[in-house]
Length: 321
Image (cartoon, rainbow, N blue to C red; front, side):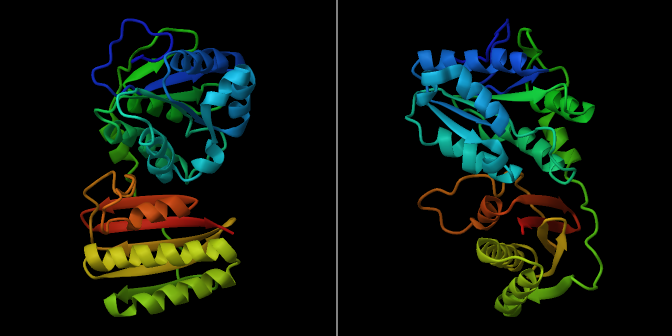
């Protein structure tokens, strides 16, 4: 099985298949997703379903006992940070399967209710899937809710998926497919962090101050309401990002920590430039030494936003309070 459901005359250009499925209600959702799962199971293929909880229950109820052979994940939890979906959800499942067998995944990373801060990272994620799985025998079906998502999200779906499936229709090639353009468009400058003031901690750092800065950031995080695992995650994020700046970003950088809504934000700025768009989104190999910093940050943060350009790189991480 190498194509998406309701296949028409579209043949995949390469082994990786990445269709967007558009649906307007529960009936259309099930009509597009359940046959995809059943066909894969009938072919003896491994299947995972990573979608928001309400949709997850729809598929589980429709499959009944057939679902025992499926790996189910609530994307609201597993994919809260879009930067962790490729390494922590999609690749984690695909890499665990025997070679020579096509892997089938339903992944729904964009849903109504994603915040304005989250959406750009979601669109970049969908664009980067194509590079992350190039040449792999994997099909990832991505549902999009036409009734609740805005026009920008639906247009971006056409740009990040080489194949699209209208509700109740046959799959066809997307006429606006441009994943590199989407990834570049959302590599946008982040809104400025608050200036120095009550509740805001800002400092410069270099190699000699890494340990002190980590402790100061953690102490400030505790004053802002972080505790337990959240505080540990802030310490890890601070350590990894500041170390990366020293090693790869010119030897120095700036750190800001503040509270916003239900999160504590940790932002690190330096003069380096991220040349690899998949940095932090590839699972680490067993024998890999180093190069895990941004991956670890993606795995523990609730959201990671990145802007990189000729003047330098800013990484902003959200940790829930």
